[in-house]
Length: 437
Ligand code: SR1
Ligand code: MG
Image (tube, rainbow, N blue to C red; front, side, top):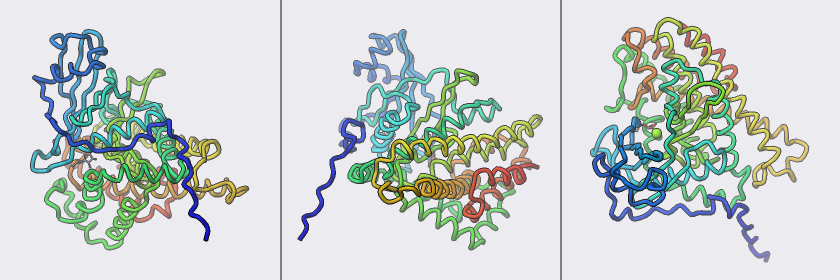
């Protein structure tokens, strides 16, 4: 009888992927607060080195605008840091919605992997696992991209940089690049992020399609939402996307890559883009991260008529961004396909001279998924808990309903017909028709 083949050596043991993801006991965990944050953070040598030695000279601000955590900016005479600590519950709802501190471990694990990959995430200064605390460089001068888009600022490099970021983080964490033993170890490590995955499973793929008390349907949208819930084709399609989300462990995802997870410095030749907040990281379908970005750009485009004069010009600009994003993704993914395909998927000894055909098929699969997940993501932000400011800040109620109705129609097409639409280019043509008044 043949001996079992020996597992090959992991090829990247010098990389952050070699570090096992372990969940600590969180012994001595204490939430930070404004009044003791300086004294607590002064216990870390590396923080004092950045800020200056005397915590009495530091100032602390709470700046978290996300749904889950508190985030503090601490400034001293010599510099500043950003301290993000997980709470044992969901900030948006409160203590009635418990949430494990382990999300900080997954966020840190994703940050160090993605920094290695693409260099466009904040640098970690200190990680204290027992305190579920990540102390990072403060991205001073940066703002959240969603807010910039709402202010109609134009960051010309954000979409293409993000497209390249997705290509690198997704490709390099997948079976295209990693030895199977490494990829499976990684997948197993991130598989513990079940609570955050469950939030996505419920909020994106389930609750909007049921009469769940946490949904937030805008008055005036009840008819459109009832029609959605009565539509068997729609319900079947969304469950198929949920199936893909649950079962297709293709790559390490950011997991929540909306425009609120991207920070941008002032627009212009020196603008910089950083991706933050990967606490939803897990192994899932590549198209999910792409779909999140596409969805939030299309929601912003849908909201433009709600903000008055100049909307047509700005909407036209916003609608170009998904194309730039996807073009950059395809181009970088193609380079990596030729330069870094060292995994066991799509091996040259089999695909050989059909490599370009295999690449086209894979890109088509990812893009189709991206469209379907974009539809799912748009719908959850219109119908479910945690809507987006882009739509919420439309001052006139009737206009908001009209914008949401148009966006929901686009989402319906994406969810039901991603396989027919096929490309972001075709979806852009559809958006130009559907999101215009
Ligand atoms: C219940 S938490 C709501 C949402 O906030 C995060 O940004 C994720 O998108 C999550 O679904
Ligand atoms: Mg977030």
